[in-house]
Image (cartoon, rainbow, N blue to C red; front, side, top):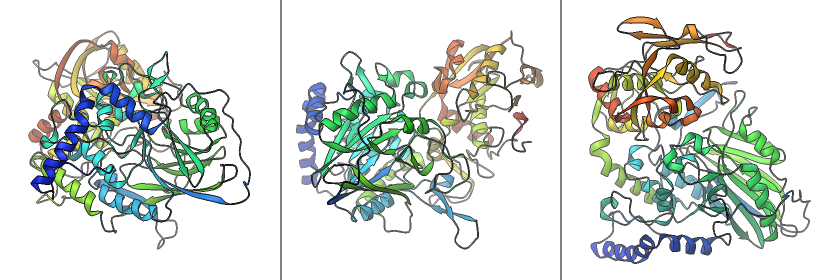
Length: 616
């Protein structure tokens, strides 16, 4: 059944009441017996009943042959890291760079994204082949702009219902609000704060997959089914969905409480024989983990991609044909270890068009290709999706359009050679300002995780702003959409040094954005754990610059995500004398109100020696 949005739009009063009654009849039993409702949904959609992960061993399968005879053509349309961007994203977040045919070796950026435009492009591509599956590789919701986040990301689910999404592998951000809210997005029902606009939320029409998210380690029962099998003209295609094993390290602990996240390779390779026993010869993995381009390239190329996805692709069974990857927000189209490996950037700016030609004798792929397609805005937007988005934007408008301050130029998340970003530093400054007072924590420094700064602040006026430079609450919320609170804690100088060294525990490193008055120098050639010279760590206290003393105690502000060891910064777990503070977005709002217009700070808080590229 295709559910339409239950928000009042063009329905008559009788239609609205009829829909309300229908949804109440369907969803109330589920609200009182969620386990039974969950089981019935799983058994109806997947014979695994959510128990993926305990299949056979081995899983090498076969590489297949030419197949001979007739073939079946199947199209897979893939997105990833949509993050609730139902409106066209702004600034650099709404651009895709492509080659400029008018300039030899040049490039041009085009506007891309927006759910209504995505719907049009998906419909156009789907019309090319009736055997089409539309898939998502995680982070469909979470870290969303206000128009979706303010309504618990229900608008994003409803938009994807209209677009015709079929399968969705969960990503780390699906767990931002905990597993109970994630289950609600799949099966429907109202949020704990009530029904949006007084209407029941129907849930997703598409299947959530989570093969490596285990709720019971004794039975290997998974939160959602591990895979889905689709049959086209007699051939079976299996879709395995999963998030990255490292999800607990990048999600607030309450969001993953009671869950175990299994190894990606082991999980897939254990499921391969199970799928083969069910007659599946073609396997597509929807994986919320990815890689990074190692050199310059465009959105439909494979520019020396490195990172976790390379080892995963190498070690997955040869029976796997395609890996739709995600998480890093990069765009690439590669072949690794005989497998197509794709990623469609983020925010709905690209859709990956994957064509599979499958032998109807062996069930194996005999030809495969992929192309990343830009979701341009030069097409007619899908009216049903556009109306849905407009409704929610209008509901959120009084809050979203309220001016909170001004800026003198773009504040971006573009990382300089020393790891600093203009907006990251500004956010750290807002958090220090909110916690400096004696009644608010006596903080002397604040650190902001770069992944928590989600969008640029653009100087050019939007369509709803009367002049350039205005910053609205909605724009501020899009920068910091998680609703984290500020935590002031006591750390020693040695613990601060250890925290800085932890920036290189990942590749690429994750540079904490420090507040004004804090600085240090690192050696790019030095080994991990010895990058930062302790004597270079400086802090301004009472107007005086001092060297941080390893044995001295200092009051440090971080958000609640970092305060619990998020992003691998586990030293923060040892912080003492904790004091809770404002929400991060409120700190930003107050800072902009008092300090307008806000400008980009100097990029001198981190210095680099032995940099591989010139770095001031």
